[in-house]
Image (cartoon, rainbow, N blue to C red):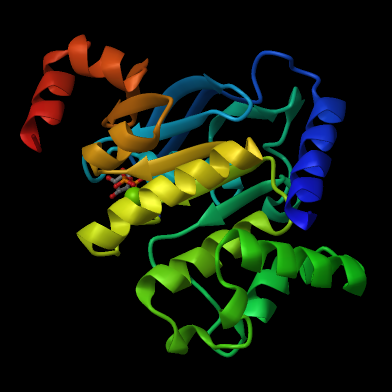
Amino acid sequence: TILNHDIQLNSDQRSQSGAGPDFDLEIQGVSKRFGSLYAVNNSSLAIHKGEIISFLGPSGCGKSTLLNMIAGFIQPDAGDIRLAGRSIVDLPPNKRETGMVFQHYALFPHMTVKANIAYGLEARGQPAALIKERVSTMLSLLKLDSFGDRYPAELSGGQRQRVAVARALAPRPKVLLLDEALSALDKNLREEMQIELSLLLRQLQITTIMVTHDQAEAFAVSDRIAIMEQGHIVQVGTPEDVYRNPASSFVLRFLGSAN
Ligand code: ADP
Ligand code: MG
């Protein structure tokens, strides 16, 4: 099927690019200051290929800033970010092979679902035949087959978020970055999307960083969780590790606060 073929290609591309056998994405001593405030302070983390990792922490702890530095929308003051063994900090966002999904979809309202999904491919100058095939694969992967010709205003919140994911995945990024991507959805839909999305990401074997302030979400979908406090990554571990052995009173209080 198209789907299997697509996934096959994806894993082939990966094995060819695999300079760093152990880690796909490496964040090395990255900092970002706004005035006198360190939004992100000397943070390091190495993420495996295909791993789903969550940045979890209270509002203002630096999650989005760190994600935006990986995507290339914010330039770090210090540190390096490497993807498949290669530094990407000097590359513009569209050359980084990262895809990003925001809380509020950021779909183009005047464009159909198909055109939204095709956007990143067109911006990269891909041939029309490839774009058409890729859009149709994405529609089917995200269960949007019958919505391709609709406009964002004609979709539900959950459908819009699927389009945002399809659009981010269409150029076949190596890394998917989700910034509170499901937070705007109501609880039932959010839980349904958590399951669906994590199944899809595991099927595609795509390295994913998910930013959330929602512990249940982080615990439900992640291989590992990185807990942030005031610009620092203060603990990294499997959901079970973090839950059983909180590294500090901050982590303990933070995990306790929403239980
Ligand atoms: P989170 O996503 O964890 O809620 P952010 O990364 O958005 O946190 O913000 C981290 C800190 O940096 C906060 O104190 C926030 O107010 C500050 N900050 C973020 N972006 C800017 C900016 N563009 N200008 C000034 N301060 C900012
Ligand atoms: Mg944020």
